[in-house]
Length: 364
Image (cartoon, rainbow, N blue to C red):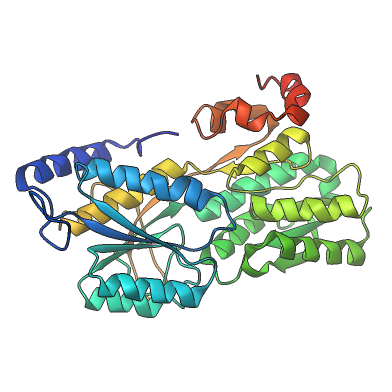
């Protein structure tokens, strides 16, 4: 992966921070003693159904915090397993433990607002990560989520070609509790509206693949398997569930199915020809941005050199943000995206069952 945000202000901010830490010996709030107390960052991730969180986000953030704090920063980690109440308890425990900063990827953006307020009252800064939580957020980092939806929509239109007007598509959106899902949908709709016929549309409970399978089975029953020419799936996990339903119904050839997150299973499905595309989001850039924001806030430093936009939630206006673009990945550019950035090796992708296909598409 690309190890930096690729913007000069970020490099300057990191260098300046390193000098500050070297001169001062770190933060003096909380910590583990030694020559100075360590920055303590509470990291709350939402679920483990999606492979990215524990494979990419957590270790990448831990590594960046360690670099920025000269090995003295500490990331306290909790995963909510998709349970909003559990995440609230985890956040409250970290507030009680007096962490310096909370980085929260909310299960439910509204449900976590009380904990965000509680953190603010305790003098603890809060960085919203990947999903924009409600409450008095100090900073936010994510991908440009409407643009992600546009990337998906454009790819689906390209795959459909003349079929866009002759059949129906199914839209499999994410959970209504996730504000990102609404942004993906909005972006996709901005491209697709007026150019395709949407036969069925679902907001998939908890983003779960099995729920996507059930939704797709219902859509096939309602529309007829010969009438569905494409499927907009908001992420790779649901794409897998959708493809399971399509195959169970005997649909052949499979219609183009979109995705997001560049999960290994999704990349393999693209190689196999079962899934048309995914959106690669460089998690290193997002995780490092969150780590930079968190450490700077913990040290009382300005974050102006890092932010590139302002966003608003229903409860907070003009939240400083770092938003990062995503890239469409199809069979044609796996080598120049996820392989080039060392997310996966060719050996990871090209299993014995896929070896011949990998060779055919030049992935070797």
